[in-house]
Figure (cartoon, rainbow, N blue to C red):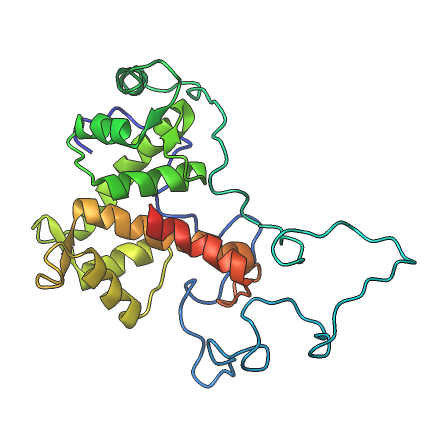
Length: 279
């Protein structure tokens, strides 16, 4: 990316992944590709409990209607938990608003990157917020919306505190170089926008095989013209790819066998999707 300091080795959040994940069995097809025709599958959204049961309610027999719950005073009992008496379920992703721990610049960080962060960190707190990050990136001809900036911050910190430290800032800075390179490589007509076919190829280069239906939805969502141009510009391309990459990585945490299928609890599903909607 023009104007960016030289990128050291070891960074590349947005770089094309290696041929296969470390330690994982080699996939037979691109991750996310549809299953072979005719393979049995559970209909998406099929209820796992009889229709009419409260969604997300824990399994178990309900007491007969009209009977009051009477505890067994002869046995030890735990104090009632909040939320209707059900213990809170453990979240596999932690608190999305957990405080961000202080960090330091990785060894060998370009002095220009350090200076850029320090200029944005006006109060010397060791953190910069979303608007400060937006301003810092604009100094390198990277004009991003606050939503894109917040999505970047979420993916590099895994929290919605909307603050980043030196370590995360460095990762964001160098990763944007890779995203710019990918965009320019697939913007073959040099129009400053990429269409659906170019976006498909860009996502494939990152290891994500999305269906034509999903591809059309992505272009429609991230096209600034509301779908008239059927293409997306660089800043929205960043947001699009970060969304696909982030959701895929969350999905892969559950799909340990790379089968293209995973099981989520209701809470885990909400905690996976909502951060991308509220960024």
